[in-house]
Image 1 (cartoon, rainbow, N blue to C red):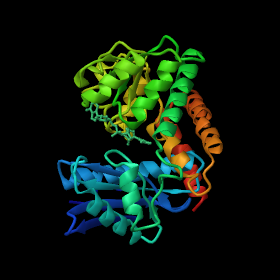
Image 2: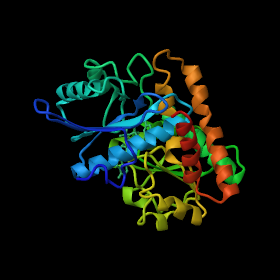
Image 3: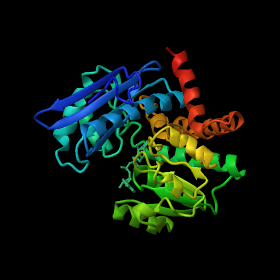
Image 4: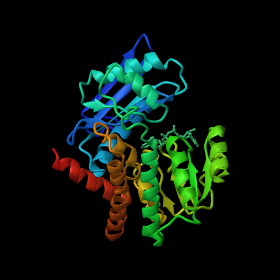
Length: 343
Ligand code: NAD
């Protein structure tokens, strides 16, 4: 398995493979870039098909964190970790203590937090072994409502840019993945009068949004073909790919999932199709912005900073139009300028 020659290797500063025999922990921690400060990014727990798949995920996710933190105006670098295990695994105490010790061994170059398959309870367990954990209970807490708020405002920025509308009222929005973020996002959209079409592989989550927000439920494979204004990917990555692109009827793609484009060229394809894409790491920065207030927590200041996602995206959309470039390229260039200036 190549690391330095891996297609997703992007001059990462540090990639650490961790194993703990007693707990069975298998994890990879990637510190992408620390120009702006210590690397911060969540820990994902997933039953990967292979070690290679886990490595690809952590390399891509950690790079995304560097760009996300830079464009969100945070003094933090980018990193991420993955635990290779079934997210429903029972042995959490031993596993997350071992993970905490692995993070601790980096001496503060990397701070972890929750991500898919990991809860704040897990992070509290890891915190018993290391101070380098963020999103702690009693401090900034669950980042998901802030990610949802930023995503909601990002959707509004896209609607304003493309249609000149100040509201999502009456628009049809498909949401893929009703997890921690997806639920709160549906709440915002419903409260403003959007019509929701949702899917998930978890029936319980679907029942809740059906009852709470009158959402229409469709099967996972049918979410792409829905006749909607906006498609919001809020599950896992790579949902914009060669297979799904021709199926899309939405004119806006804006959701909270990380790494939505299977490959960079899919951003070009969206542009060619006239679909406005809100770059994932810009629209989903709300949670990490909230985490950045961890030490002296101030919910109002955090919310105000999350609200800036609307302006950042509006600037990106405008520049992309003016320069006839993809929104992703414009965002990357803006982020790189900030990262390089801090070198
Ligand atoms: P989550 O695990 O709580 O929710 C993900 C949901 O997607 C689950 O309900 C799961 O059942 C569902 N799902 C998985 N595969 C699916 C499929 N094929 N079809 C339909 N549904 C499927 O995770 P979350 O915290 O809500 O995060 C969602 C996404 O947003 C992830 O990509 C995550 O990396 C990203 N994100 C989350 C945060 C945060 O604050 N939690 C911040 C930034 C980015």
